[in-house]
Image (cartoon, rainbow, N blue to C red; front, side, top):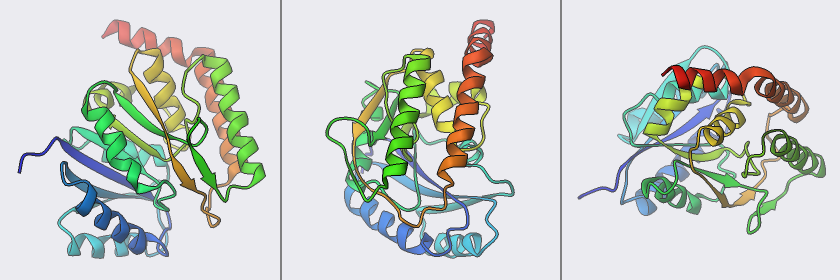
Length: 248
């Protein structure tokens, strides 16, 4: 069979022993049925788990030729993606382990990047056509407020920087990853802002999202770190990157 392209689907995980097996099984089934035109692989990137997540991941790896596991001693979604995206696949994808985004959008974001019309495709909960279920008012206000702040500061066209559902071309990764400083939750926003400023084409796709009521993300703490990250980019970060690109 001739495949469109190779795709690595990265699942960054931290202490996810209770949901890992079910989520990966669901993703494997979907990809086997709906991603047949791609040569796909799932990468479980354990970043600092202290429970049985890594051991469970290794058991899954033994049972499936389409699953690989990497382990990092330190926490950080950005750190996990920087490591996992060093693979030789043509398209890199990542999604949250709770699979909050309807998986039917997976081939859609891959197709956008494969077409080469876009360098990055991102799921969005904040544009027309999207639907979000089960999200608390506090999370909604913080999410939309954060979107307004970074769009005002940087004049970028995308609205949802933090949705855990993205696809990116290997060429774009090769250029951008060395420029992204953040290793945590701000990684996504920094990646997208830099991509926009450097002229990469970003497609924002409206998605159906079911919020995870058991999410361990500290929304207030994450928001504060994101604000500090925006300040770093605004007051020197962008200019530093542009100078680096000019030197190259």
